[in-house]
Length: 313
Image (cartoon, rainbow, N blue to C red; front, side, top):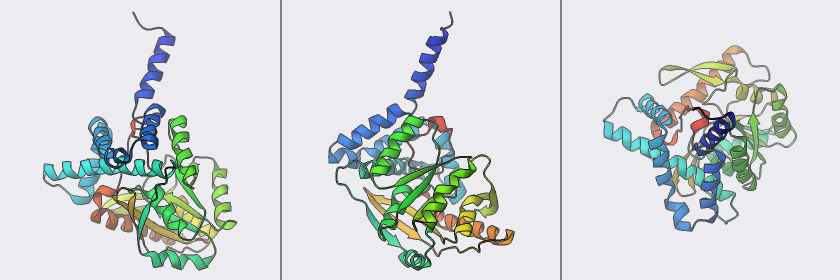
């Protein structure tokens, strides 16, 4: 006997809530972060990360493929060690992000490399586009860099499938002083970014290592393979005349991050095809250099959005 439509709906809803990226899991994790003892929030996240890596087969395969892209074929034991480090760092980054918005008094430690590139962008007076990738702690490391000059920060992120889970994590980011704009297909979605850069002289942080469906892109080469860089981040810098500052972050330990800034990319207001392609390749080359040096700090899961762990982005 097949279940009734109402029973099927109930089972489907229960199944969605049991997925790792759901509101149920997000609330349970946030409760542990907000109310757990110091030792718990410091030392338990790697265990959660290893558990996610064990059960999320698609994400595990994608992370392993990324390690092989960066480092080539290696001994199985070395690959498994680095794979475990990726998921452990991911859980640690998510814990850090929630702690900063928990009101418990925790603060991030930022160690800046290339800070003079950041300083060089300040007198230009057009705001700043921070070009980032899905590296460890990018959504808290970048704003921590911007806070050194008391610049308002807007972080652009993809829409999550679970709206309630997204709202829960966004609330924590807001309490930590980070404004979030979720990217979509609406052409008017860019207006808040233009206002933030032109009127408020703020910082807009955007990722360039993932391409949303339907998004225009420039072709580049990464690790000897064809790669596509979102064109929007380049066009935003050009139309606003804001310098594009490549920034990568890596997690050194509990609430401890290294922030690596590179020379800014300056585009004319009306760049030609060659100028856009050169800027895209510059970003890809910088990402390749970072990933070769710190392969376990690049979170490239390329998963089914229904089954991802609570995202750090």
